[in-house]
Length: 59
Image (cartoon, rainbow, N blue to C red; front, side, top):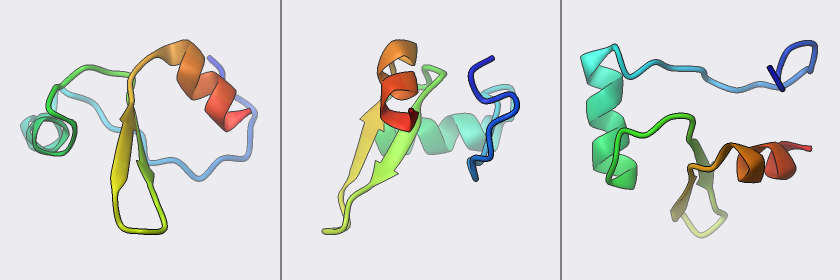
């Protein structure tokens, strides 16, 4: 797992929790995981779903 041993402050959630799954659908339009919600300075939130893209962004 990419995050193991890394000092990252990320909120890890599971779609098995109905509330989290609903929040994913409302925010990004799908319940696909992994995903990363990236808050922009202007208030927009960008949703990233591809594992390789997420790893590149966090590296």
